[in-house]
Image (cartoon, rainbow, N blue to C red; front, side, top):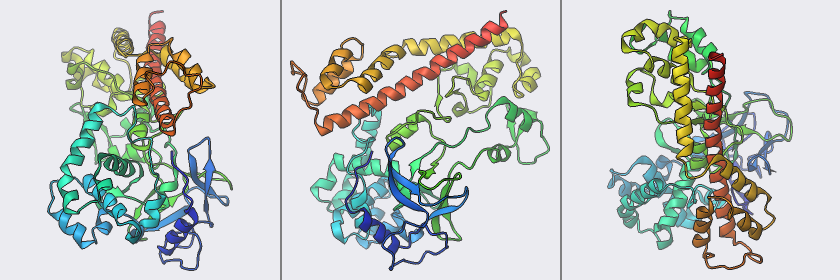
Length: 483
């Protein structure tokens, strides 16, 4: 995803001077005598099958051990960048802009300073391109939103007298992709921060959250905890939100710590020397990973699919819309099953069966048969209404993986309905009138677009597979009920 930078050593030396360190000794003092901020716990390494460039363990690491510390003064935030009076005064005159828009402008402003920017070593280390910018899979809605936000920031960029190259939409998209894919959470600014060295960690998904029936059934049995929420208006059925959270693994492996006045990162598991040390940014679906970070996971326990539901279903339960989804393995979420069971129950009987529903039990055999048939039919309709089928996407992805050259790929794609996508690709790269692809060598830009296209196909294939697996799940339940 990123391009290697020849000045990595000077960047790490610069970081050490700012007090960034992977030493287990707690200090935020600048390390002027060190040639690198890494070496005690971590090193920059290449992991071709798991994210490319990342951070590897230089020794055995224990789970929970601190592995990197980045002082607050080294974080690139709106607050630190706006120490520049010219920038601060200009931003204060444009209070209608969002915090994210302002941080994007701050990034471009610092880029425009060149070598005079205090962040220059870090800025030169940032990728020149991202898989999340100008991608073929970006929706029209997202592109329109980006253009609207760019235009809203025009007057601020004019006040700051941006150089032409930093005023373009292309520059805005690059900066927005940087902010989207690399910022980390800080409690005092919703825009987040750019964290030198800390953004070298590659992503690992957190463990599966306790969303199964057994976990909720156990938690639902405890009604003595004072801080509770009421489900569906039934005061006899309560779930403690904090207790639910405490039964899942810590969702992130780093955060800003006030006592250390630094962003601190911890090993999320035991690592052997040479292992890649991964960071969990939080619970993301594959679509969110693709949108914000430009990659997806082959096995993502936090992936989920939402399907269209009847409007009356939402009024039959107090479960939030965000909890009504299908898991990565095709099983309906606990909340979706509960909502469907209540929706399929006559309104006059819902209160009397509430204790069954919220304990994860079936209301009746007829009720379960009805919702499984409805769910299977709805999933089937979703698949049928998509432009391409699961089989066609599988075929296309295999062609992308196994074609020895572009000519072979073009011959294969003539056989599937995705040929409209192929035409769009050819038109985008001025190849539509090419009569023979035998000797065609794709440009670097075309190869990048091909990689992004492949990511799109991978995502939609996984999406369809989840829906297909849900149909299979429903049919298995129906078979057992109708015996």
